[in-house]
Amino acid sequence: MYSTDQFRVFSGAAADRLLSRPRRLVQEGRSPDAELAYQELLLTNPDLRAAWMELFSLLREAGRFPEALTLAERSAREFGDGSLTAILRGAALVELGRFREGLTALDDAAQLDPDSGLVWHEAGYAAYRLGELSRALMALDRAFALEPHGATLRLRGRVLRQAGRYLAAEVAFEGAAQAAEFSAQREAAEAEIRLTRRFAAFPGSKPEALPPARRWFAEHGAVILTGMPGAAATDADLVQGMAQLAKDLGWRFTSVVALEAWPGWYDLAQVLDVTVAATLPEDPSAIPLAACRNPATIPRWAECGAALAARGRGATLALHQGADTPAADIVGQLADAPPRALDLAFAVEAAQHPEGRLRPRVLT
Image (cartoon, rainbow, N blue to C red; front, side, top):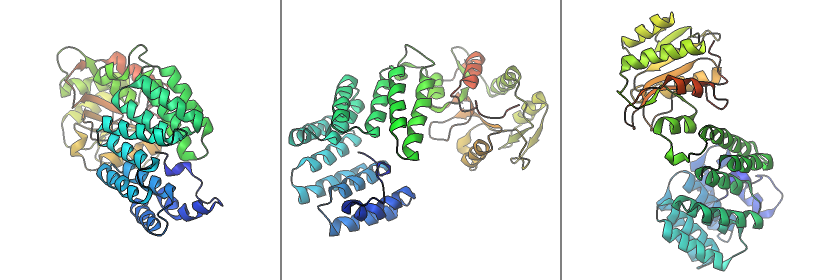
């Protein structure tokens, strides 16, 4: 479904005037207020198709898929078994993991309204989720021919990337960035380009075929200290690997910010020839290394990482990184993958990759 950021909030069209308030609330990040505004609008203007679609998108973005399906069934009372109901129902079923049912509903929608770009866009997304990438591309090509749209280009890029066609995927994302009318659209496309270029560091390999450490780098841009077969690196090994990486790359931290009490941070600070601190330094010229063993146990982890990213100086280090915790800039072991031995050669490559998250940071 095309998201609200695709629309001009204050256009002169009558429908857009009605939708301007909920759209503005969405763009301000006030989702509960926006949802209430959409619900009120549907009570007074139940025939406004865009309101149904945009409320559906709001629920979808929030991961509220059962409620999105309920909304689709509710739309049938207004529009009957028309194409809009079939599109909403099919999209909701896909998000609920009921892919075949979703595709069947979208096929019904295509029979009812074969010239709707949105129908084929959602059919392409459903096929993508099913792993039927060729079918997804055919549907998206038809969607774009009927209704050129940046959202369709972005989705096409994701399909191509999943197929390991990284150059073609980058071209699709570049097209989406150039076609963007709003900053949110352009930033989303540019983020996809950076991600695709990291995957392209492993030519000939599809994303799902990559080892966990390399896929983590591609998805997050983070440096991974391990990844080689062999005896699993201990926490002490990871500390030594971090010190060696800093030496190899000429990083010169000014302090190790220990986000927990652990003797290993003093060992790391001694090798780096810096002091140990408990909080981020106020000095804007400082280059701190904020470190912990497991970020899931650190309440201020996300805040610390965001602060360093905003400063553009320093880095975060997590010895054990879980998938459900904000990614550290430098990771020792992935908690959800089998432990591995140090792989400092790849860590150096990851740190120097043009699209890596540490590339623009001041570390010396």
